[in-house]
Amino acid sequence: MKSKLKDFHHYKGSGLTRFEKVEKKVIEHILSTKIPDQNREDSQTFEFLHASGCMQVGKILAQKRNLDVNLAGTACVLHDIFVIINGTYKNHGIEGAAIAEKILREIGGFPEEEIRIITQAVAHHSEKEVKSNDPYTELVKDADVFENSLYKNAEGFYRIHKPPHIFQKYVKRIIKVRNELNLPEKPIFQ
Ligand SMILES: [Fe+2]
Image (cartoon, rainbow, N blue to C red; front, side):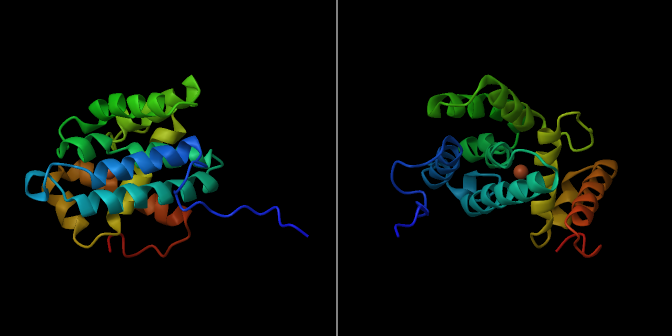
């Protein structure tokens, strides 16, 4: 009997979904950058790990929250697209939303509502101290801080670069995600 199971494409060939095409595009941007690590605020390696890591965390959180896994993954993989392309975090949320929209429209097939959800999440993901009414924006914020918490010394980075009250909001989000995923309470940072 012939199996109906399809082989996983491993991101090769022409059988990618629109969501997978975005994922591939983001990785291609990271790999093809002309801005060397010494001129970037973080490294190509970190951007690769963080984009991929946030995407997968976002897909897990989407399942926990009954949200669309593909939409969540796409918003997450695109959230730092401005940093990936420009090497700097300055205004990266708002400016990244325009780049994300361009990518989504070029790839095509995304309904307007999906474009709105994804670009809003990219635009506002840095506002960790704000609780948005949009579940995808909240998901991207949570995936972003939680994924960051898994890197050694991320705590030190946050403590140096964020005012104390904002740092506490980050910690609150990380604890919330750890609870949601049934992880032990500690360590909050790895
Ligand atoms: Fe991020």
